[in-house]
Length: 516
View 1 (spheres, rainbow, N blue to C red):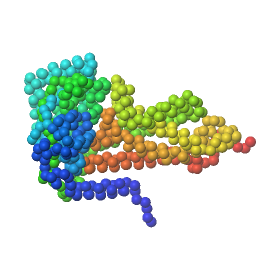
View 2 (tube, helix red, strand yellow):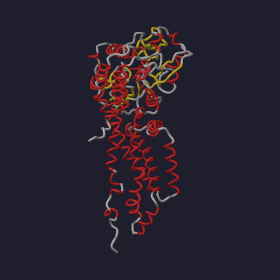
View 3 (cartoon, rainbow, N blue to C red):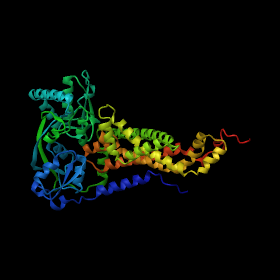
């Protein structure tokens, strides 16, 4: 007897096939045809990758005015684009790129520097921010004078990783309150994940500062381009992630005195960058780096938990919100419908990422509400708007004669709606409802913009440590596929009872006199 293949077999077979093809084929990049670049001048008219949120585009434009820019969200994205030939080079801070070269031997840097830079911590431009900045500057002066800062630098720039241990900021006594530090969590050696904890020069320095002044410390991991808005709006007390001190940025935030100085350099591929190799061995190595080393599978598990948390609560609250609003508008009251239609137009007409950022940085900018709950509120609003539309369309599709017949049989308005109209309307919108859940769980991939470490963000964090592109990205895709299939199956099972064709006559006629 032939049976249907399990659904998970198909995506897994596709994934394995893609991995074999990707690992086995040779790179076909501009570097292989032209050889490695050796000077900045050779990059004129070339495509240069720029990390969003940095000032590297302005620096590069001074030296390479005819270069074309492509923007990427993170360093792993830039490395992947370089290796696949999408870009010819990308600028970066020398200490970070030296670490990158250790993890990705095919990448090298040019000898010429684009610019000199100073890194600083940033603080809000208000009274509290000014006072905190002054305290930090006094602390910096002290650790520079006694050699502590140099010792910290030596630890994080040393090849001996055994010395690079967590700072223990979670256990600081908060006698003077707790400070929130925003950091990228993907900028080694300044801040990155090691053994599932945020470590690095920035974190050590912030920990010593808080210990000196009696503060507790909480670290918020967020995208680099979100750190300055988070500081400006007061969501965090200060931030550090290799942030270059510039006059333009100083108009928005307070900079500390420099705690690190260096240069901006250009990363390119080596002329003899290895191509191809044993596909099976590459897959094994990629799997080990992605999941096994430093117990990185724990990061994926945490990300899955956060994604499920946001999705499930958004479905529950969004469904309740959409239903309550629909019942408020069901009788056609003009005021209710006008207000509802305006709010739905406003919510659905706005990109989800913009809505989340408005909620996080403006509406709840001065509150201590966590990013996860802001995401739940945002997605509940959009899901509720979708549920309202589905209910309206489903109810309108039910023949009005059903309502009239129910009234004639002695049903009340409440009984008519819940026992006659709604079950029949469900047949029209349940397919769309399950589809909206799938869309919702995929949409949660953007919550990293508001300092939420979901499945996608955790995948990015792993990529920032491994510089592997294919395996982490495909793994995240498979996890989303499984989560979507699981949730829709559960919803289908839970809502099976609303189909009137599967209900018995006694259930519909409950409370109705049939033998008068």
